[in-house]
Length: 349
Ligand SMILES: Nc1nc2c(ncn2[C@@H]2O[C@H](COP(=O)(O)OP(=O)(O)OP(=O)(O)O)[C@@H](O)[C@H]2O)c(=O)[nH]1
Ligand SMILES: [Mg+2]
Ligand SMILES: [Zn+2]
Image (cartoon, rainbow, N blue to C red; front, side, top):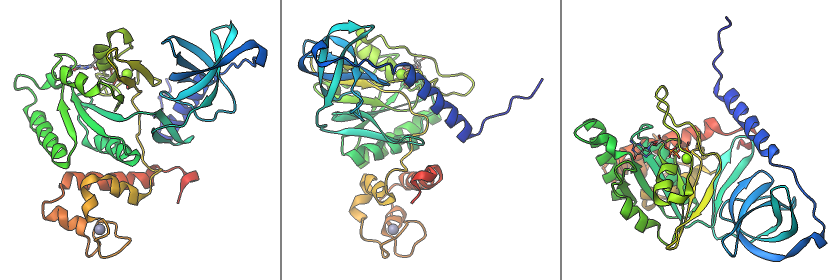
């Protein structure tokens, strides 16, 4: 039997990309209604986007699937739109989205093939979800913190599945988690240890989400959809166990979707992203996005200081003096290095 060849990073990335394109194309059938077949213009909100279609919510809270006019080149979950209802629905399509209103905010991520892609619009709080399983990875938290700082939307950090640390199991991991919690809180970030399993911390989480437009972001398998299901029982989202072999999530959620709290506020559940790259940012911007570095910016001896072994680097000095935490400094350099390694040739500087 032929030995199955292991795919390299770029091959598996290409396969995933083509698969996604195929799925998008399957929802690309468009209908060209003429003006007489459509009603007056209405307002609405995008709940979820699928290729050339989107689920929108009208002013009465009804959710309808619509076509997207080809002239619209960017439309995401959370967008406020103008649309027109078809007098006669065709297949499942009930209207057409004609325009996107100005966005109050936008969370984006870079995609190797498609350039910078929007994730969600008009949010005012980014909830970074991490967990004990898949392994607790502060570098991924730092990547999301950089993305949040870049768009200047308040982030907060949740560490889910702390039930897995109960009863003295995993003491080493519990200690590490407590130390990181202190580190992030010292920098000025909110950090909560929660469990969807035991409901620990969920009442407080509900308060934090009230009247805000929040998005859950984070690795696959950390429990974003499970938490959404608990907070909003009608959402009924599919969830899947973390693989026992790889200890990784299975990318269960594939598109972002917006849900409402009856008491006010919205929550967007988003898919776990495989490689949350930041190569679209200038390295100086990443430095600025490490919040605790800001006080030192402009103080290094050389303007193009890389904050490594450069003489007169006051950021490195601050690390040596214990004013900046070395774990964050190391994480910063890991991000800077990966930006160069992961940037597609089309975006080389
Ligand atoms: N032990 C434990 N397991 C949890 C907890 N929360 C979620 N899980 C489990 O974690 C697994 C993954 O949860 P999901 O909600 O699908 O994760 P997700 O972040 O939405 O993943 P993607 O949609 O792939 O991005 C499921 O088997 C959940 O039952 C928790 O607090 N404790
Ligand atoms: Mg999910
Ligand atoms: Zn420096």
